[in-house]
Length: 260
Image (cartoon, rainbow, N blue to C red; front, side):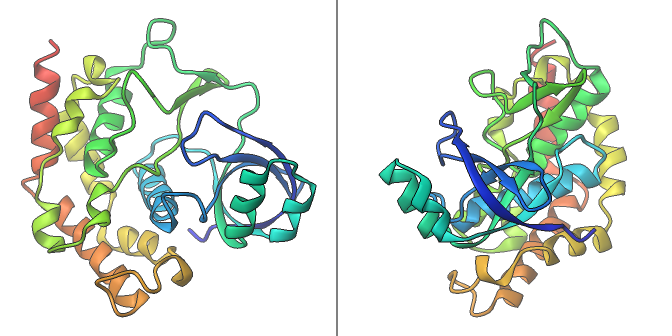
């Protein structure tokens, strides 16, 4: 599951609805991408969350736009008149992350296109699994493109890695914020999703996704002395998270029952 690496060739426009000021760019493969900057306020951890949570969702069979690494030359900032964006681009020189741009996509509206219980339950399960605080009615981070629902913006997920303690103990925690999930009213099959998706996310697959995290996004991050030790903590966390009984899934099932 190696990710492609492209090079940014043109900064097109900022997407100011995002707190980290993502941007629409063109790359050397002539594709258009939504770029997430490593120099933004959330730092590399937001890119790690975007990468890992997004690829875990894809591995679980959920629709996520293609994720690519993006090499960014700080000199591209010369053509941008906004000083804030210039600073952001220069601070992000090097390896960044982007999602494939979905032209003409629409913000998800449950009344116009309600999800099936199976899909809603799978998305709720995934967001509880990755501790995603950012899929609420206020900010759904769901798009409809070609009549299909797509998951975007996982940079706010994985809240555990902002304060590492004991990866095993952290993995056992439920995720109370799942009660605010935008799809909870349609998620009537979380128990079935739990059984199905947990089996898909095998240890080998989880390990392969963690191995995708670049060294430069992990180096110098306490309390880990090396990127390898940092990756090992992530892998320990995810494998513990998937071990039965899964408290996050039980919490999601309880939260969904309250919407019936």
